[in-house]
Length: 75
Image 1 (cartoon, rainbow, N blue to C red):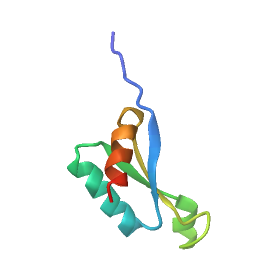
Image 2 (image 1 turned 180 degrees about the vertical axis):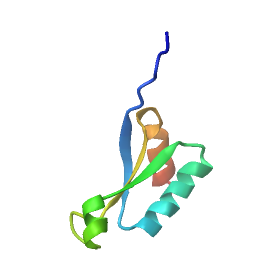
Image 3 (image 1 turned 120 degrees about the vertical axis):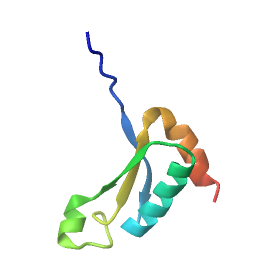
């Protein structure tokens, strides 16, 4: 029987833009924390750079959230 593990992804950080998101993601990667970048597709499609559709979420496994928050709070 094949058991699949369900991973719950949570937002660890919301960047203002993609370059900032890549910097934050690099810090998480250096710490060995699995993550992915989820840009707001509406904002990306329509070119919004400010307001509620401008954020870029960096998500981590729920189990890594506390460690990710500690790393991102160091600066």
